[in-house]
Length: 310
Length: 275
Image (cartoon, rainbow over all chains, first blue to last red; front, top):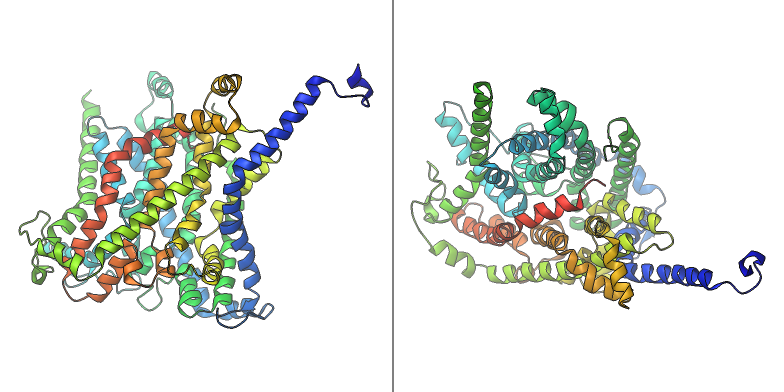
């Protein structure tokens, strides 16, 4: 009765609900406070600050000087910067298919084996957890033209020396090979886990229907794995846009500037030449491109990702 | 039956060869790190140690503050994991179990944080670190590592699968939210916590760009940066000594893998990765 008038004292139940809601809001945000501060300080804040910085010239020593769109105008005319964007797109076109497709193929193959499954899994996954810098140093020796082990085997089999690190085209092949070896384990594991999550009954049903392995893969496994594949593609694209370690450690962007990526360019401009404002301009542009591409992928996911099997 | 056996054999053969190729570089690193420095480049290469020149391992520790680098890496990784896991489990708990206002919006904002490239946050963070005098210290690496949207996501996914009855029972026993979090949810989430800890440890242990930007003194460097500096200085010299350092740097990830690979698998199977 009291509740109906809306004016009288709220009933015990409503008061309880209201208190609970208030408590939920309070404790929710209290639990979130540390993460929220981290997020604001190290992700959101810096992005806003780098947007602001891209309108300034700044060298850490002198006070920032407002230059309007000057940095952006300069960037569009800077052939080194556009070259670095082109190179990054090349890496996207090479590396994303390698990791997203071969990771799946290998995961499927390994999941079909019996006794040696965990050994294969370890061999494929293990390189992805070791220190990139350490193994890249070792691979640079393996790839070296005259004294490298890889060319030794090529010569042994009757071939001739390949300039793995010093030829502008081969440098991409080299980085792709290294990237496969070093990082295929990451996407492999995501797919492998996705495969493990598919209930055995689906396979049994396919077997009863007499479907072949290939048929089962394309009609049962693949559709059920599209959410994993979507996650893998999105994170991979974001990752390759930022590719730094591999070209820095193997070719240092070379030969010439053949493998200089946007991330290398930003590092060089912002930290080696201390053109902080200009570096921020390039990095904020990179962020906008990643944002646009990711939104685009989320918009397109309805076309090929099926979430409705549960 | 016969028809099936041949593909299985081919499959195993292929995977066996691939596994050998994947592991061969590690054998070469180990075998070469034990060669006499003058023979580093001598061909044919060996994949099984033929000589045992342990002096290389002593050299890498004496010609260069290698031990400091190891300790720096341990320090940065341990502190990063510790802080990150406190922050991530609290946030994951809030997102999974507390129906506060604006929850889905805040969660989405956190997930969007995964899109932000390291380079874009690195520049402003560097400026702030330099203003408060943390450039060159390990805090410049630890502080930004406390926040990881992916870890929060994993932990939330896992905590959402814990049945309500546990929470209800604890509430009836008079436990407040914090006690429910600390004494019920954290202990029940061990597998996902171990998984995210391992992955965070490895990613800080292996991180290269941040140390490269923030650290310039040898005795402050982390292991990957120290090794890169060492190899840069000895480009023509004794590769075996560098490879001895590389071998040592692989010990910790290997141990973590041996101890934790089941947790990585279990944890990610259970948190479902389905978004």
